[in-house]
Length: 401
Ligand SMILES: C[S@@+](CC[C@H](N)C(=O)[O-])C[C@H]1O[C@@H](n2cnc3c(N)ncnc32)[C@H](O)[C@@H]1O
Ligand code: SF4
Image (tube, rainbow, N blue to C red; front, side, top):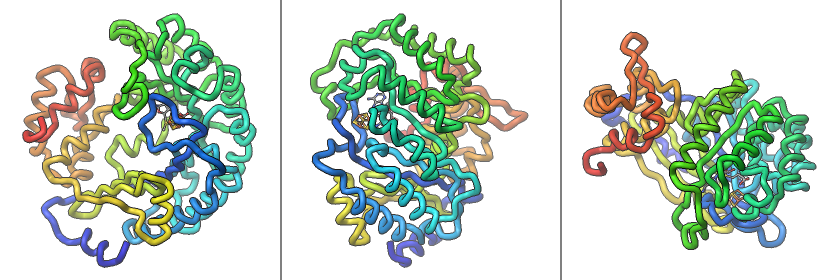
């Protein structure tokens, strides 16, 4: 990224951002043992050894080329996601974290999350990941039921999942379990058993996602039989009841946390914060006083490594159009139980409140959000949470609605 480009992003424009938002760093590690049939993340089946050293070199080059865009800004959180980052050796993760620390000023005590799969050899590395500087582990359990795990094509079994969570609880003060529900062959009783098992570990954070059939996946091509909408809705009710009963607050549509254990990195996404995204296919969002920039890196790992080492990791970047900013802000902000402050909207989008006022009024009239005038806060109602995509769609620009 040349300095000329940076000046280009700093030039005057029609938006007036009040202040630059907090900055986070996302690092994508794109390999997995096996591609899951429902997954549309940028993950590639590992053939032979993962080229860890070359990939770390590429990440370092990518980061260095990006520095002018975030000059002088501190980083509040780092998320090492995938793919399966736990396929990287703890020494490689330690190297990665020290490469980051050498180039970007991290806030004291910054949250550093690593996504891990629950295989046996990954589990044996958890303590070493902690020693490498990871502060928070996110384990992709999905289910504790052998049948369900097989039907969704996972390589781990229930015993490995339980052992991995037990190990994470021992090695980390804070960790997350990812579960999915509405799985093929799952009924409410089976989900109840998954929740019982998960909650027995007293996780400080739980993420529970409704399995979705994403285009361009094996499941989209050959869909399994899934629970009907009524059962899925009963399952969600059960998830909300059971988590609330143990003090896990649903602070975002799919995220539940004990006090003090919310994921700061993800909160920053939902609050329209900034993030630099490095690694294959990583997305980034960076603000400047008069514009918001989105970036994407080369998706295919070999191409990414080559391009990043040549100083050209970014495959695509564009300024968010003024008319899209309101919707983009709402996409994340309305996922949050506590909603957002109106002053935040103005500060982070650089738009006046009038840009979304008619849509906001419409959402209030439909009972999907409530507007606390005294506090200057807008938050989704229970109904708004239940019909989230309808609510978000209210904010689409006229030409896309
Ligand atoms: C980036 S993924 C990868 C994490 C890790 N590799 C794993 O799968 O164990 C993060 C989470 O997204 C969720 N996820 C992935 N594909 C999904 C889908 N099609 N529908 C719902 N949730 C999905 C899973 O719970 C997964 O743990
Ligand atoms: S392990 Fe995780 S990232 Fe990899 S293919 Fe499966 S769901 Fe996707």
